[in-house]
Amino acid sequence: MPQSGAPEAPSVELLQDERVEAEVLESELVYEGRVWDVRSDTVAYGSGRIVRQYVDHPGAAAVVAVDDDERVLLIQQYRHPIRHRDWEIPAGLLDVAGEAPIETARRELAEEVDLVASSWEPLVSIFTTPGGNDEIVHLFLARGLSPAGEVHAREDEEADIRVEWLPLADAVAGIFAGRLRNGILTTGVLAAAERLRAARTPASV
Image (cartoon, rainbow, N blue to C red; front, side, top):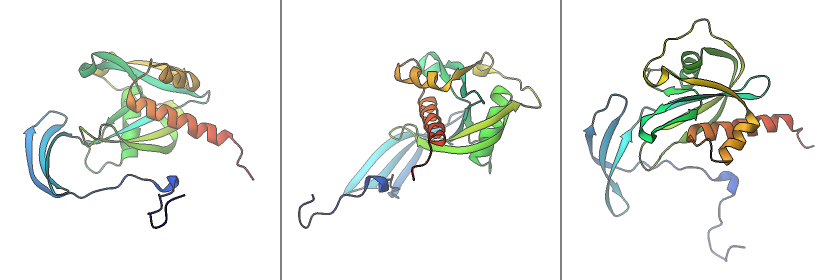
């Protein structure tokens, strides 16, 4: 019980991230990259000011594609910063002006793995590394999968992309065993597993 006069703690169900419009006193483009930039901002915060460098990111959309046998589609490609060919889910940058995240997701599913889906549901949106970049990734569950009308040419890291269908339960097990460590994959697979579990569970009366 809270002490008399003490503010009552908010209900857990009501907790949410809070947007703060801190005044940016100065913003400097430190590095202009091919995909994203690095900025250094001086911000008025509290009774003083802070300086923070971060990656200025366009954001992304990602797809958890699950077939009728509840297998999830995973892709493996080389990621130079971590020196790994890690397992991921199809994803792409929000780099087309005016394109909604779900349309980016549709485009990436077709371009990366030559698939289309008849059913799309938003799963979750996440900040990937809030201390180092402003990236937000919107994740979608795609069902009713079928081959796309055309096969896309791929280059660079996507040239030798590997595609595997893994039972969703095995993907969850791989995450907890530490064999699958990609953050977007982890979030998407666990969210999809919970969504499908909830759909199978009869609502309580």
